[in-house]
Length: 312
Image 1 (cartoon, rainbow, N blue to C red):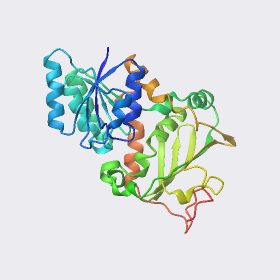
Image 2: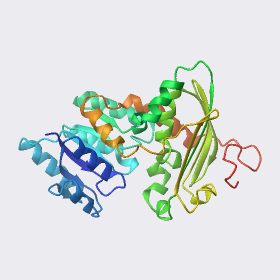
Image 3: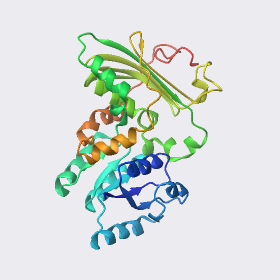
């Protein structure tokens, strides 16, 4: 049985990883989080050891290794800015790492992790689950080899409360900002479908919103991301807290459903040796890292690429 440890057990996405570990027949032996609101473990692995101090977690991992119960994979669900440090820890303890998005905040962090992979012989896999979504696979098959250039509109609004900006997610140095924390999966998906990025223009960069234009090999993409519920379309307000829209030309690409199994599928691919690598994730990390410091291009009072129902 494949043995797992988990860093960030109290995080929002941790239950998805626990469920995926169970789905692939693995065993979660030990988990760590400085916060102790981790009762969700009982629904998955009630016998797992748990620590709120990293040093004790580290010591327990080493004890397992010395007693012939070495951890095979360490799953990482910690805050974004800690991902690279926790990946290094995993590899140095003799395990492979499975890291939630974004793998790192800047491309130079990938260079350091690549060196540690070489030094240890262990591997870092990241979660890029949209590549496994049936609708996105179909989209790639349809558009990636198209001879024509496509115009794409991407809008993603996912409401967050006041807590967001009071947490590490609201601190750009820790989360990478909205484009990184909310958008990196979409930028990876767009590159997966339409090829390498050729240029990027930033039009809006706020605490709760971001927007711009990306030119890929086969498409020009106008994108808008928000965590402000006021940006939801009137037809959605009061009914849903999330709005996704992806259009290619006049065609709407529907991918609102089908997310529940994607972490399970990701883990199956990783255990089969087909996980997404450091180099797979590099292009989308480069996009969000560059956006963070790009000059803002404005054309008048109203931002031209924000959907029309959003107030300027």
